[in-house]
Image (cartoon, rainbow, N blue to C red; front, side, top):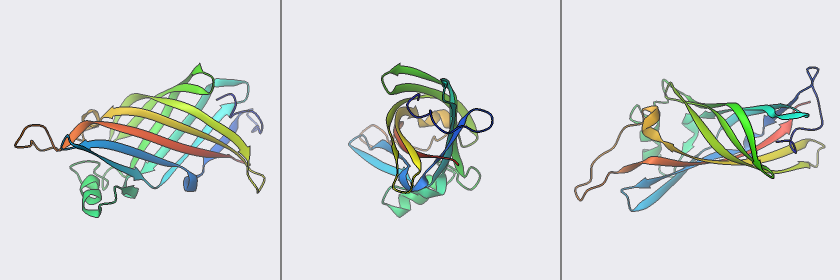
Length: 188
């Protein structure tokens, strides 16, 4: 993240970048009945990136995703995913990630390890992150972009609902592929 954290500093000597929710999203993909893939996304996300320009290994990132913003292009499925069978949005309205460490693994690539809390369960995950660039927008704001990918076992967070198919297999796979696109704006 050294490319991303290098200009404005707060009094404490660190920079703060806030997520631009209009240009950020979290997508997921899961196998359905073992013959197709269902894709969806969460439309609302907040978060921030905090780091020192001299120590990118000490930067941190926090993201919070609004469970009610889930969109799989099928309203009945979205309602089922919000229910207690899956995310239990009534009692657990957000999915939250807070980094513990960021390790460079190549030019513009990082392993970001942190705590993911879903349905009240917190587990450590590692996300493969790519720095996508830095620009100044037409209004003079500095922006940085990152993409991240990981795979999760949904049952690790208590998302256990499933049904056995008559011919064998299950309705929903345990593995979920997650992709996050995040654009951050330097906070003034």
